[in-house]
Image (tube, rainbow, N blue to C red; front, side, top):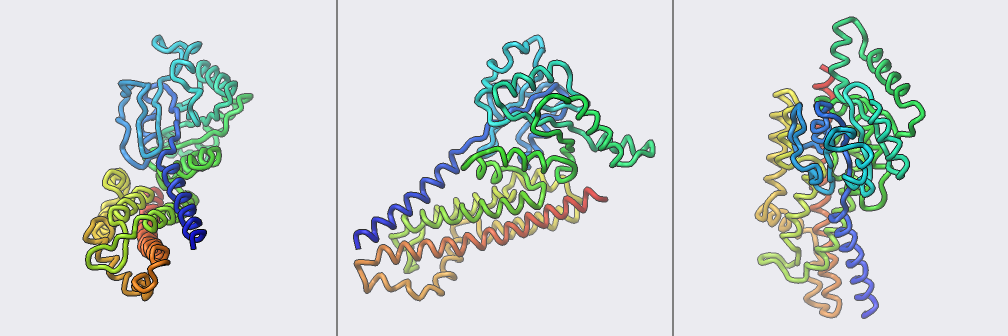
Length: 368
């Protein structure tokens, strides 16, 4: 029996360690470019939340302080070769050696100082992603002159390919912050995700905006892992019964899990404010109503207690620990795990449906 308890404790320790590693993971991403290139808007589009102040002049007061969104740390940096930041000292000035990736941003083409910086970044083995923003403005101008969207896109992409010939960037991406699920933003995010390792990979996909079906599918994988880890914590903590219930589950833990799932799927207040402004009024109202219903069901202590009481009626084994005292802790842990898993899975299912509907509404709005 001691071995069984030991094995259980080891499993619970592993889940707890994995959850802590996920929460502590940080991805440092440098966003480099001249003022007016749309760096702040790009950061907001990646985060799915207005975390960066948007302006036509340099808005970052302290370039060494990151813009944080969960585990994402964005460093909004000016282009090199300015009077304040000469190119020779640029990499050391901003500790770019510590970055996980660098996104080099332009609204037209890359210039001599940009190309110099690309060479230096590649020299220190930093992945560089070349992004051309505001593609939607170029497309609109082209359409007014009778040039198709594809022709404009291909022309700009080919020009940048020629512009960057001989420079080993990870890719060239044409993006629009006003239309995040159109053009190449999702490809950029998927490529950065592929370059990361272990818990940084998980943290990145959990914190980015949903701009493609692939990202939505990857978020489901991460959400499932998060529920399993929280369920293991509930199993470890759930040996003291909740008043009125014959089981032990940590309510505080359940509320934290709910907030985690909401954040992963873009359902918290800040993310909703950002996303809903990109939708037409009818879709925005419908999505907002569903998010409120989700929060009412999963968002507070009273709501969680109601869910636990409903779920507990299906667990016939809940009284077994009273009659078998030696294995009682194991049974109680198993019940705590199962209860949290059930409710956590319901959280994911409903959050995923809302996120899918939001994404479909983006596509509908962008295609109109």
